[in-house]
Amino acid sequence: MLEGGCDTDFSVSVANSMAQVSISKRLYTILKGLSDTEQKLFIYSVVNTLTESPEIKSVQLLVEGKRV
Image (cartoon, rainbow, N blue to C red; front, side, top):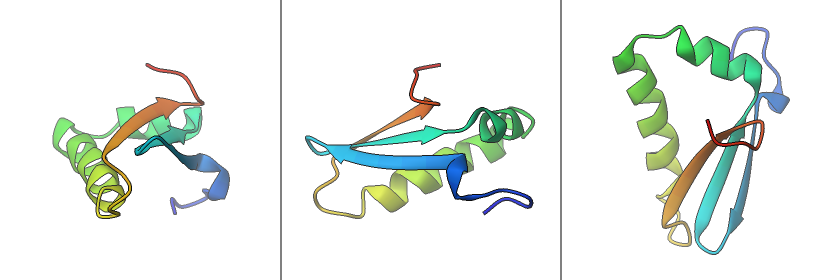
């Protein structure tokens, strides 16, 4: 978890072999402040971790449930 963060900074749901990860505006703002490499590492880490599960074939990242 992020310093000062809580478990409401993101949520994950799975349907039809796709995991939807919805992050909070707070987390999105923090990520925008990172370098391109750090942002890519964050995304890779989330996608790689979730797709280790055999029932997850794809991952969609959202901000508060909406595409950005």
